[in-house]
Image (cartoon, rainbow, N blue to C red):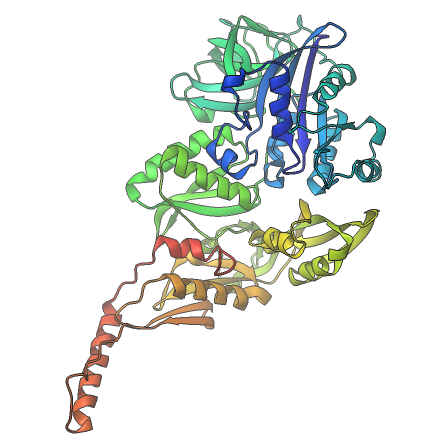
Length: 599
């Protein structure tokens, strides 16, 4: 155990975590040069296309240090985006130390600070690494000042390196070996293995990723999951070295995989403790927190025959993404589907994309919403995240919405633009503090619903890409909540209904009406698209009808002949409108979620 090191790489998005992991794997000979590709730990196509890490991935490496000792390094690469902080939290529970990467040109950003606090919460040893020192805009001295002022770490301990150019990689490996502690644990104690992740293999069933805290896990023994109290035979254990490498046993301090013939996905809880049936541990491992979804949206299959397949796909996806929640839902317009909970809009986008690619499903999404807490006049308390479940407004005594504490790090010149953006979004208690020369941290308490749609895009736009954003959920506060219904040809479309603050109702209703008018095809008669609160119409757009020139054949004679033909056409269109059924295309449901016509 003295020669084992369990560590993860944490950083703000796009500071070079995956590139540094690539260099560490290459330097330790974890992959043949002919098999190497960039972002080797990012296994999903969507990760490689977008250049972001979505799933934390594990790899065991062997490294011979300068002192001649050979060490086993268990590396866990983590995501950087705020929406995947739950993945980071689970990875940190399996480690004793962390490499905290800071970009030499960008400096300390919002998610850098958030991930540092997460690592300190689990009492990890931190090694700061200044990456991208080969860039022309790199300013190592300024970044060292920020590491000292913003993070409270020793700036002279920070290791300068360039993962892309391969500079300083040996220094990073030596620091991992000599500065990070070895894992603690007693191989003779009863088995305690933390399940920190899982995957689904169509041939072998559920593959558990575990960190052995105490004891030894051997093939052929009987294992028990402590939260569900279910027993399984351990078929195979091993290490993850880009591929699964079979071993006879995993000892205290090891990170590896377990196959136990688990076929039912719902039998697994990520964060559960695996122990032996013959000699069980006295209690499960502490510290695991369930993810609390903050954004809710309904997902419907385009074809009703895909409803069963969608349920199975979500079951398997939840195993691989413990932050996703779902329950059955239905809509008059779109049929049966599932109401899903996500950690943010990027999380929603990634889940939708994965369902399309990995399970070949064509899907429709409703508008995202947050969870509101209501107290009715009879004293009953309700939580509502679906507009169709909102009770009669006359019965609601109070409504509360979730607030977040947003932390925005920006260059000093953008303070005015960001303060205006926070004011637009009903921000409260906006304060700012100077971190280092020319850099400001602005904090504001904002309703989560105001951040959902395009806050991050607007932030990047007004700060020309230099702003970074992180948030934590605070509490619930009173709000003036209304339900905006969208009527197409006088008929409400329940999948487009939305819950908004009364001040923003007209603006949001108009946005929806304009988008729908752009995407719904024209008919033989005029179509009115309206936004309404109860019986009050607050916004309207009209799709004009196709017109046939019925008077073209009249080349002379009395005006009454033309009028008679026009009246006849008018009656026909009126009759057509009464029996007409508007088909709303899939693109219309997607268009209303976009912020401007250009996107």
